[in-house]
Amino acid sequence: MTITLEFKGTEQLGVPRGEAFKKLTDPEVLSKSIPDAQGISISEDGEIKCDVKVKLSVVQSTMHVTMKITESRPDTYAKVQSVATGAGSRAEIEALFNLAGEDLAEVQWSVTARLSGLISGLGSGVLRSYGYKLIEQIVGGVKRSISY
Image (cartoon, rainbow, N blue to C red):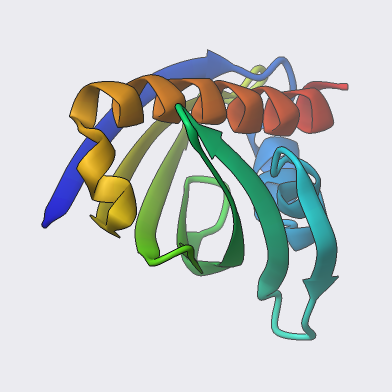
């Protein structure tokens, strides 16, 4: 069984669009925004790998995460794809970032997560709640890095 969850939001970044784009597409900045990440490594081509402890309801596990910026258009758009595996589960996550504004940038983001394996048995309500919490932490971390 596969569950698909979608999330969307808009954030005011408080810095010029070019500066926001530069940080948003920096693997070092992205890696620091992953909650509870351990053993972070970044390859020369910008692929991020780490382990993340996940606690969902009564399930606790470590997921092995691979993340990479797969598309970008200078100062306007970035696509980040991630795969997390572990404990008989798989999560394929696609995050899209569209930047607007000049002096003070705004980012419209959307995340689509496809979850399969044991994790999908927890139900969409539990997963959606956890997803919102996780995305708030990630977006908050990126926003703090960009906005100083």
